[in-house]
Length: 125
Length: 167
Image (cartoon, rainbow over all chains, first blue to last red):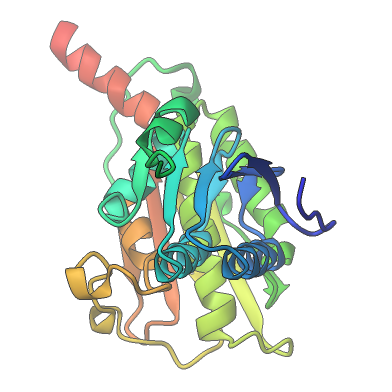
């Protein structure tokens, strides 16, 4: 675990060159938690060169449009650092939120963690 | 509203009272979404009692959260001296939630389409789209500071459809 704060709804774990982000809450609705998540992820991304990040939504059953806004900011920051961001394990109801907002066009979303990992480029030889 | 008593959903026994004004509950809360959670819980447990589907409950939670967020942030501009007025009615067939803020209101037609290519990376402006997608009906008053959300109980609708098909 790289960093953990009491108000943070996320847990970051390093797996080789990958960073896995998991949620410690089922509902991503609280403004202070969403702000903390955004702050934690963007400041982490800024320390990385070409970050490879997978955000798993396993166990998450609600999220607000503010949380979507924060994910968009994180996606932008990752792209700025020439990195790659993947989302995975999104439950069908939340996936519908991504479809309605057409954010499935902006994010690369995979059904499982395994598929998300496979989609990331292998390190150059 | 016309009533049909033909359906046999167990909760439908009380459907004769669907339009009774007595079924409306109302409360005034501070401009803080956490204060609204108790009301939200009350609405959702009534819906659960009437066997609304899982998807209905998800949709209602999402829409009520977004509407209250908008009322607090955009309507009352988080001014703690202003209140949010919530009124709701849950029947076996439908759930209506009316949320009013004390702001000047806005024109819902002026909200840009957040799904267009040029707006796709905007970090806000999706709440209304989501409410419209997940509710059966979303109506604003003329001033634009009161929103009414309506969700039908899909388990009753499904049952009625089946009875039309097989009855």
